[in-house]
Length: 199
Image (cartoon, rainbow, N blue to C red; front, side, top):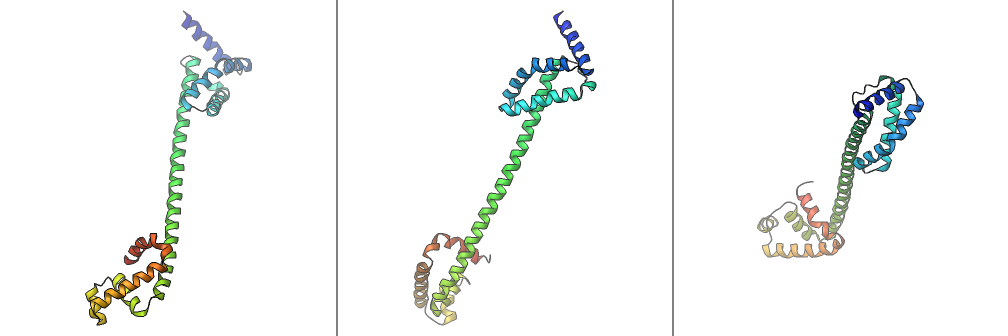
């Protein structure tokens, strides 16, 4: 019996809403706003967003009052609409977060790549300057070993010197380079490997 009375009451309320009765609309707003806001908050965990959703719901209720087609109770309709709007908001937040995460990843990657490229280019310049400091024979042996990837015996044969001389010249070259490139040693191996690969 009580359910029938509630349904009749809802029907009367809806009919008056559809006719644009502002007093009825205000009563519905006052009756349900706080509970709907609390319900939205339990889903979103955000009081401001919850308030915006409920306010928007009532705004749509008023704007579309003439075309309302509510087959359940008004209360059930309002709760279901609030739930759906909350779910849509969460989906929007997730899409926005994924986009932000992607932008952050791209920016971080670009920054890291640019920083690495700058360090690499700087080291290449410093390496070339250091190589120019080497005595000619020393530089030739080092370049043949490191850049042409020749074995000590191959270098000795090509330059017509002994392997012992090649070893001595390489030791001398590395000692000078370590001194000249002391500030760049952490990046030496990485960038030399890149140089060997022709990058």
